[in-house]
Length: 465
Image 1 (spheres, rainbow, N blue to C red):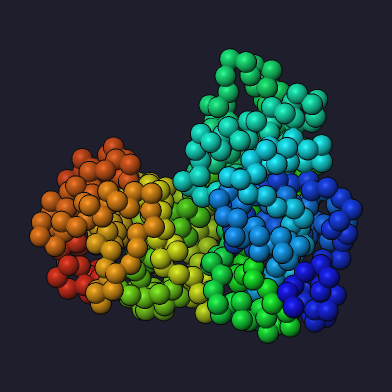
Image 2 (tube, helix red, strand yellow):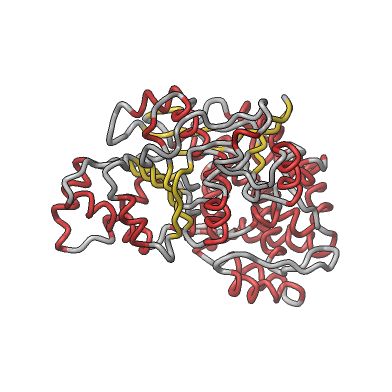
């Protein structure tokens, strides 16, 4: 039997399940991007608020392109189990905040109507860095315009993606979709809607067969949508809401509400995400499957510690960065999180500009070493060969995969020219680094070392220096 509303009562008593009525109320949140991360992060925060008796936080979840996931969740009445595992132990939870589902590509009008529904108070987004397209701006604008025309209150629209100033970027995207006829909508948007910046942090790997089997054993039921995550989570959001009372509510559920999201945002992007990208690329090239298998290697662990301490931290405003660094290294090693290196290496061309570039530029401005980032960049160049050091091929899952592989193919025969060509791309490195002779020289040095002696040898040489 499958997990569903009908079988919920049969779950073991130690599994936290929803105690609120999931059928009587309309959703108050429309979420765009119904992937694993949202379901093991914001959906669990909203589940807390619902469990406390506030019925306004049910979710209408929108899969942007994936009908298969939406169909799985529909078949289970929006229910799924989450394994929360860390050093303190393992527990299972079934959040119940997901009440309705749609697919944006095939049910666009239903999504627009959901944004414009009288019960909707929030729209949240986890559509990934590459999802911030004109089509997204138009979708949101169409829903917001319908709200304004219906005389409904404004709403909070919160981006939860790994983009600096994500609230500002989202508002700009919506405004870019407007035409001369939208004067009233723009006025209403500025007066009544809020686009807070926010930072979300929790490691949520894509579901695996192992997690599905563990869920089946723990629940005594089949659950095709189960997930695994860590105990740690953080949500930092700007104190900017359509309903100012939401600040206190979110704080009651453990969310940090602050006027200064940027310092947390930068620390997360450059420390967690920047280290993740470096390890993911190392793992892909060396044939290590998971982040835990990378951080478990002493020289890679030392590399990550030094990268964060020496090249990232000097340019952060987060005062507790050393504690954050140490917690990250412990989190990366969580054996329950089978976090695939290839999953994290996905869309690297979209991630590197946010994750590495600011730290390298900061080091250059201070005339300080950027050696760890140069080595990481060299590993990225090697990654574009699409074959690991054991000779196993892998796919580059990236919007720029074709052009990256076309440039990367030359590194066996013309390695220096290949490095120069890949480092010349301003979409990856901005306008300064492609012109910086010292940066190009160090990436070229490490790339030659990697081609001749391998990634591990290069990392060891750097960490032992």
